[in-house]
Amino acid sequence: MRILPGAIRPQISVAYLLARATDTIADTELVSVAIRLESLSALRERILGASAAPLNFGLLAQGNALPGERILLERIEEVLRLLEQFSEADRARIRDVLRIIISGQELDLRRFGDSKPGTLIALETEEELDDYTYRVAGCVGEFWTQLCRAHLFPQASLDDELLLRNGIRFGKGLQWVNILRDIPRDLRLGRCYMPRQSLAALGLSPNDLLSADTQLRFRPLYDEYLNQAEGHLAAGWDYTNALPPGQARLRLACAWPILIGARTIQQLRQGNVLDGSRRLKVGRRAVYAMMGRSVLLLAWPAGWRSQFRHE
Image (cartoon, rainbow, N blue to C red; front, side):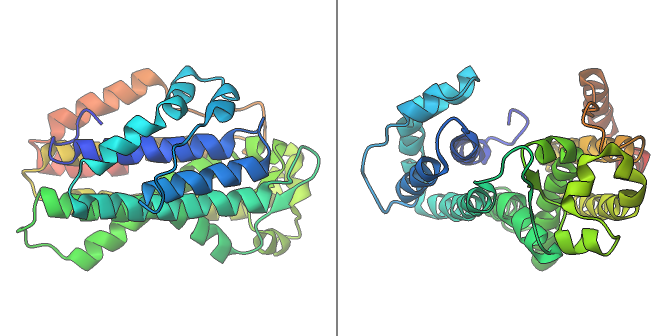
């Protein structure tokens, strides 16, 4: 957030806090699915301006171990007041993206609400997976693009259709990385985001993924998904390089998650992806080195563009 240009930092920060609050509600497993859905609905109505009923998420806040998440739920009214301070156009943009994000979270809760260790629930089709990645992440790229266009470069000559399409793919690519990295953890929770139909084409079932010994049979599909994720990130890199040259802060804000995602994909191409004891993460030192190098390369276009291929 700190690197973002000041003209869009407040709007994106408030949108992030609201999305983080809805995500926290959806993930609070100490509270029943019914209460979580009811709470998401109540927050959605407040965000959309359809209700003025005060919110009290005390029970949900108590169910969160992270202090920041507890504070966010306890002070949600303050965030909602910040939303009302924006222009009508910016409120509409924030409301639109939160409406889509919450719809994805509600769909996820209804789909996986009864999942538990030992009982797997899986997506059925590739279309369901694509729809999920759009709802929780692709729509963010859409929102980001519209907000930046309005506030940072309204007069720039750009291919808006391509920029918007690549912005959506940018968001999807980051979500793909999360899904592909977290397969063992999700399986332990009873959730399988790998479509049942795609697994069946390899003679596999979702339950087969619980065994690390299955990874050689699963690997062709997994590698295909890694390629898709990388393709989405490549579209995100094209998006970043299509931004006006003077938008250095915005370019950096886009580049960093792409480069970290690309490095994560490299790691995921090695080893057993179904090994639950293996949690991949790009180290902090590597992240700082990547960020520093990208700042230095801003003034060297060829070097800047080559970063994605090298990660």
